[in-house]
Image (cartoon, rainbow, N blue to C red):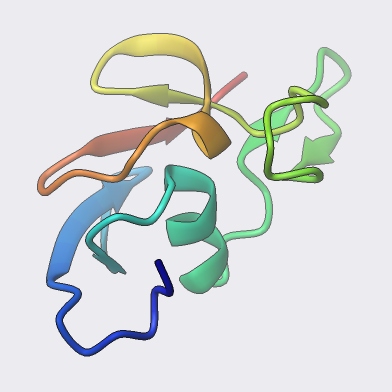
Length: 88
């Protein structure tokens, strides 16, 4: 289903304690991308990384969601009130 249908509800979430909007049904990775958040984790050497494949193969999209660490953001549907943090 296309994210551009008008019947998609706007929802809000936080990333690193900043409020953002997303469309119901989007993955967390897409919600971050749509809010121009291109870096969602840091490597051991503090290099910034972001989502790459958007289908669960590369593991570049790891984030912390509602206190759970190392979640693949491309495989999780965004929900109202989600608290997402950069994975380190």
